[in-house]
Length: 350
Image (tube, rainbow, N blue to C red; front, side):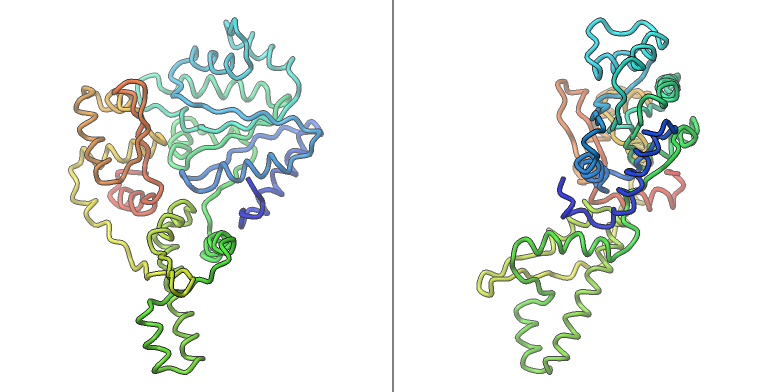
């Protein structure tokens, strides 16, 4: 939530600020914030909200469950706007919304609009109808995971309904490096890229200038490997950073081990049921076991066998639901880059 820790987002925050001013002048604005899980969408929106002019009303909303039908959409809006008696039609809903105070609506969980089953587009189209009919009253800012956004654009051309897009993957290695080092500096302790043995050996054999050059070389290789492994996803970069760093109690500093190139070739040897299962989880931004079974037209036990094996490989993270079938599975952000790259190269994910 602190701007201090937000790196490489000045342009995006400036864009959002300018769009708010346009909206205040009655110009239509709607923004899609797009990026994979862990890429910093929520952090960007938190900082935007904190820096928004105090005269602007900002309302934070979230789609916490999959929207399947038009009735689901009506119930969601009744919940968002605390309308106990609900809404009977889109006409009634839009009329009610236009009577509410003008506001910037920040909506997270846009991936819950995706459902690849018969009639799965109805809820999306219904929701977009409401968005379009209220854009002069609300400024819509919606966050979407990247793969579901692509799926929605393929299915319904969703990008046509947003005047602007903001993407949150880091495009430069230097931005990832700076974001990590800002957090490192708050510790107050030095960071080196050599082991104790390596350091002592270099002190005995190299000049000080040569030692510094060797250290810079190791540092540059580490960040190059880190950027390749994370593909610009900050949560993935933080994960690889944390598994590489150790605390040297004797010297009061942190030591960073080489990351190296990560090998995910094993993914290609998985059975196609697992590969297509991975692709659908990614394309939906996460799925409950019940939804997974419905999409693949299999029973719930088969769904759990597939999902459980992928979870065992640490490719998924799981949120426990109220019922066995309601456990929610999402791709582990740490493996976003290698998994999506592998599936795309096999023409399973597009």
